[in-house]
Image (cartoon, rainbow over all chains, first blue to last red; front, side):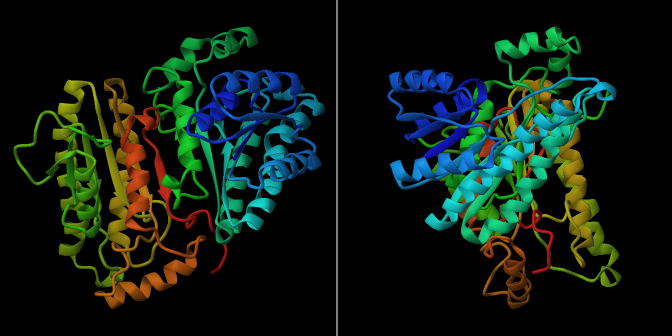
Length: 248
Length: 216
């Protein structure tokens, strides 16, 4: 039984689909309930058991409600993936407080509330695995991404704290730090935001390409699985060498 | 058909308990395992598994020049030659994975393990540098940093090591050592194409050792 937050589309959806293909029942938890339901229909057509639940990760009680509902229906929770996110690009000198707050609320606080709600039931059920979506931006700064970089760095430390705290409850907590995935949205993103072209992202990778979606979902399903049973508190880079690279 | 059917995998450190376990597990998955001390290394090497031996602790003031040389200088030079030779073949074929399996000494401080920590730190730097240099040839290099491993660091036959690791188990967030199988599972993921975008990084299989910052 796997819950993925922000799973109505993009990486979250692909993570849910990857777990589904491995035989898991999945919960598509998303602030956009209609989109979550559409995602469920799509997974249904692939023979994957999925349900949609509304979740605004900024509200602590809502993660708990999702956990309660999952336990009521399935009486178990094996994996929780904190994927919900927002990306702001904004000159820090003019960054409006509400934009800072939203970024921190969704990316960092939302991840904590998800971990907390999932951790409570995992402790009760004898264990589980949590995977948080970090980013290369947890380690590599980018101008105009103050909120995103700061919150993602926070996710890495949160991952380590909870891993240390919950290890004896047999709860593993890990993160994945991808560089940008080559989605159709990503190709336009830098240009529409006026800060980067797709080529700049490609060139910054020693591998001279962007991540494929599969490469991110493989890392998430690996960390969630028993193959990684001695891996906890770790942030697994899926970045084609981005963070390792320090040259021109 | 195993996960590594028909793959040629060179293993350095086959003499260690971990090396022996890996060799058996790779063979079970269909790999053709070649010991790294062979001088006629095949041009068609798919993967290089470099297992860094874990020496016993020695207070640094008692560490002889010969011991330092053996652990740091000689090892590093041997690894350099191995990486250079195997890497050249991988570059020519535009395909390959190098996995270095070591301890945590390159990441955090271990008193009395100065030489092996220096070696591991150097290997981590090498991992990053080679990953950036060889990524364009589809050659990946990753460092797997292990915590206490049953069979490698814990041995009834070696009471000194056992004493050290009894404390190590308390120090590990999971309060236990890894089984050899757990390390192998994680290593196999990193060696496989499932990890095709992971390069130049350190992955820890340490049961939360380095995440843990409090007293025991």
